[in-house]
Image (cartoon, rainbow, N blue to C red; front, side):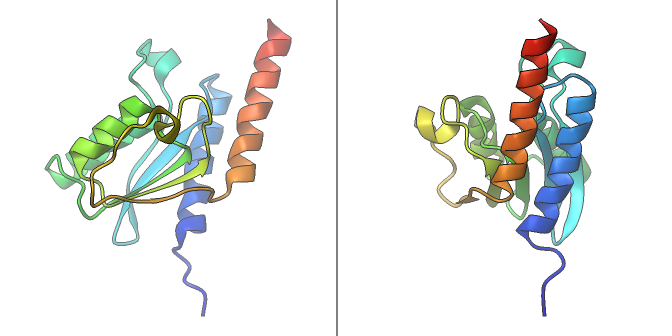
Length: 149
């Protein structure tokens, strides 16, 4: 029997958030945070809207999840994000002590792995979940941005 709530299921929810960001003219990164198969945070990039370079989807998700849980540690949570987190977000995820990070597309230039950023030792990482879909959305966004300028 197939588990309905697997990494692909929740990554599709993160991709829906990335589409919302895309429609708003934000870099299309979406994120959800899950605890016990329940989404407790659903966010996307808001850097343009908020005029804030720190308003990445992951940062928004960490804050929303912490508020929902009533505490700063996300030790039983999983983050699903459409793009490999940057070093800023990875640093925040380190401090949150998140249990698991699942990302879609790799970020070969600015991702935490390329930058050598460490995560909390107990954090598990899974990459490449629906990577093609996440990457395609990102490519489409930047092609359209270039054509508008």
